[in-house]
Length: 280
View (tube, one colour):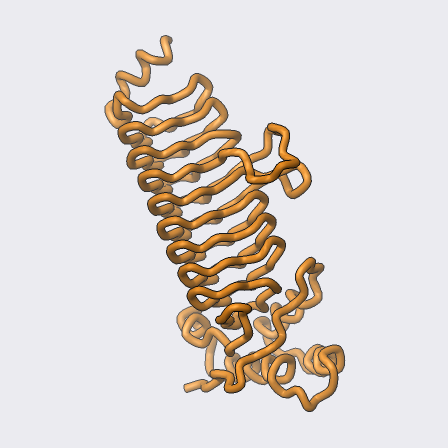
């Protein structure tokens, strides 16, 4: 069947959209005016491209994802070493990507894949660089930029106008305050703010929303204080050993596993003069 004729018969594809032969498009996908879809793109059921969206490269857009105007997804990375290799971009189901976001494909010197998880919200003018991995349920506010190879854990929140250095890891459930410059790793469930960013406490609101009980909050707070606040307890390795010896509860263990994992940037360890650590 003629490719152009097939697209003209599709009621949810605007006639001004340009769909390359080879693109795999589910029957109920909506493609608005002036969108461009490349030959190696897969649009799963329920995807909506509102208008003026460019999707290119070896890219998969998960079921029910919504892409707003003037976004570009799967274009070549801003890496001078990239020579056109068939690297990939994957967007998870039900994720919303708001106006003017840019998400670049991976590189062969990295993982080869740039990945945004399910049920995320990327607000306007977010840049996700090559080889970044964004977990599920992540909220990234307006004008956030990240270098290559950044990893963001599930349910993290990144405040507006923040900048994440390449190779930085943001732990699960962490919160980055607005306009922060993050140049080292943020442990799970912590909050950081500032330029350069410093630890300001635990993300208590997020922890309570995810159902962590009062006893669990106290255990996590005690571990956090030993690691990052109570500096009279010796060097960091000594404090880490004490927390590891007394590790109690899955959230504390997850924080320790994050600290033990390989890192190219190290941890953010310095804290505000007064750390917000109240548990109601």
